[in-house]
Length: 61
Image 1 (tube, rainbow, N blue to C red):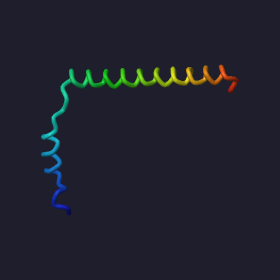
Image 2 (cartoon, rainbow, N blue to C red):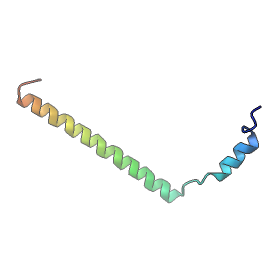
Image 3 (cartoon, helix red, strand yellow):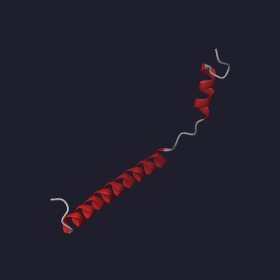
Image 4 (cartoon, rainbow, N blue to C red):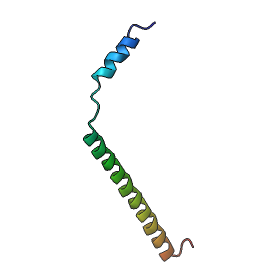
């Protein structure tokens, strides 16, 4: 068995983890959701803009 891999070693490592507080977790979750929504809207707007210009020059239907 590998020396660095043991159940007691795993337990020690789990105790060393600094878990985020509820407030931090909520803020980080909100930040990720806002980021995803922003970029979703951004890419949809880019798609509409490109398709508008393509229709303007006569490419596409």
